[in-house]
Image 1 (tube, helix red, strand yellow):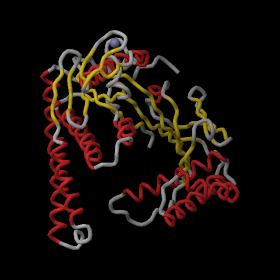
Image 2 (tube, rainbow, N blue to C red):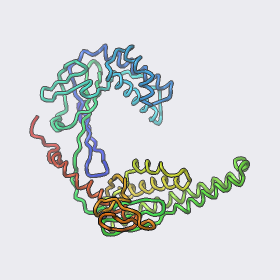
Image 3 (tube, protein in one colour):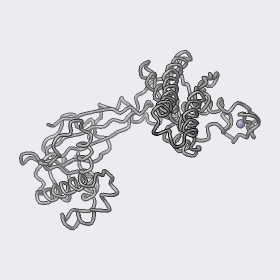
Image 4 (spheres, helix red, strand yellow):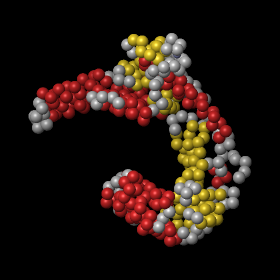
Length: 392
Ligand SMILES: [Zn+2]
């Protein structure tokens, strides 16, 4: 029962997040009526979610917040935690593959937000929960190890008349690893460009081949505007073209992933720098709605996926950086570059001129190096402190 379960979440760089759940036995907080009302409210929300088939916190808030507060007399923050809690239960049920009986919530379990609903004082070994001060009676022996962790949300649980407070705690730690070398990868429609600050390798994509088949499918549909859905032969051919396009992209992505990691190894790199996909999506959103653009997004995601897969397989790390302006900023002086020819740009300040894709790779390389070298700012929370704190 009183255990500390640890798990480290890889963040793709050498900074990792340690998360720990501390389970502590506490004195009875005299919160039975409130806890019962919370559980009633949670069941209410759970039923509502089931009937409305939603997991949207906004929808729940708009529909139920006022009612829950009045009917169940819960504090504001606890009301919100109550429906977040119910949504988590509902999602868990939706996700479970067997999806047995709908959960009926027998045990008392409350979600608590730090400060708003609870605080812990490890010096005095007390906790303040929804206005009630209680003693911490039992705790994991290695509690001291987590002294400097950040206190996150907790769960107040009652089991057979005994109360427990399960507190989630987090800390960012730096797992020091020496960086041998970095390779940055720029993916665009026609080319995958990768390299470090000295050399660049280009891998042509097969996007045009794939787009060709998409075009054949579109032409076929255009040629038979009414019949194509009913005519089995035309339908099959259309499907065949789409499949062919998809296969080309998928096949290419797999091979490209392998090739990129092989090149990275050849260049003695142990870190691969990729563009942050989330930022990429906002960029791709601005693209036209054509099938070539949609294929591009698919190609992009697939290539990243296979690079990461191959990297993991070969013991290399992947770091994501913000790609904004990476192909128009001067990698030498940071000034804005202006177009000087077909796919070439020139720096207005220092005169450096290069191909757009190479510029992107140099900038991504620089951003990757910066990300990895700014990690030492975290050295005051380095692993040597981790595990051997002096005292409370
Ligand atoms: Zn410049």
